[in-house]
Image 1: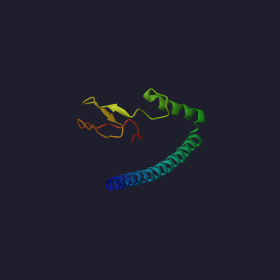
Image 2 (image 1 turned 180 degrees about the vertical axis):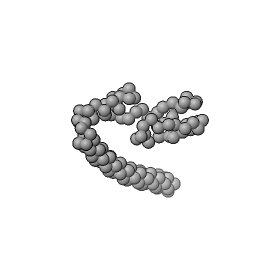
Image 3 (image 1 turned 90 degrees about the horizontal axis):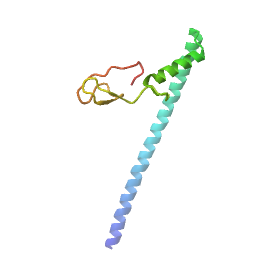
Length: 118
């Protein structure tokens, strides 16, 4: 009898854990779909801007690609990204995520390095 109660408790705990995992999985699936939609929208916008720049400025695709490569290399790494994920605070020297607008240690405001920095 005592063993059966223990087993039932274990089954309920496992069932609750499985339900939470299923819910979390569903939420992550929705978030992935949302981000995929956002990436597709941004890709479409980038393609439109590329074509407008090419067609109305006289720049060739090669010149635009060269600019993309130049921007990519500004952080010293040809990785297809805008820059490293961190930088150092000018005031206290601690590492700051590029997502923050100020240092969480000393409050120093972080200046954006480029227009599209988050």
